[in-house]
Image 1 (cartoon, one colour):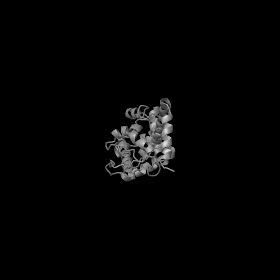
Image 2 (cartoon, helix red, strand yellow):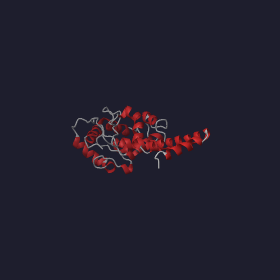
Image 3 (cartoon, one colour):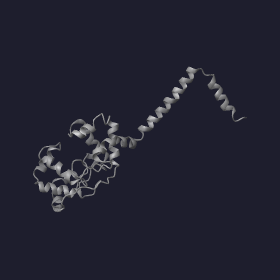
Image 4 (tube, one colour):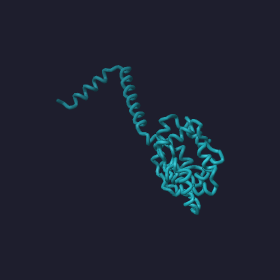
Length: 220
């Protein structure tokens, strides 16, 4: 049998269709292809997270390393569940920060899938930005104070506890940690009342020592 006969017959059948039928068939094929394209995009959360993170990178850096002066925290490597909870807190208003509330709203993160995608992307980042540490003079005092006042919730070395949404403090910029603890002690941020009571009992030197010690612990 001539190998070209099946193709010729298919061509003849196509030519017998009137123009409306041809247009309908072509539209169906295009729609099916577009649906497959969209489905493949949804199946690639890493790519979606990378695109969504572009807004975040303006402040947090491409590597998620934050800023050494303490204005922006390092977020690279934090568990996805931790990032997700923090974003949800900003979106709901439970945690306040004008920049974060703006960049986590529906104009930038359109819903739960977007929050999930960018959270997973951040969790996979590996930072290159050096951590900002303190003076190094009171590290033993910082370690002892942390063990006494903080370890019950944050663990012995300040590592993340993803199941409870607790972020890693270890490896964070000392400048950022110190600023957030002092704000909490003064009641100027959204940390819990238990944080405020614990931190209000500490001198500014002890707060700086804790921050310095944590910054030198292994980052996530």
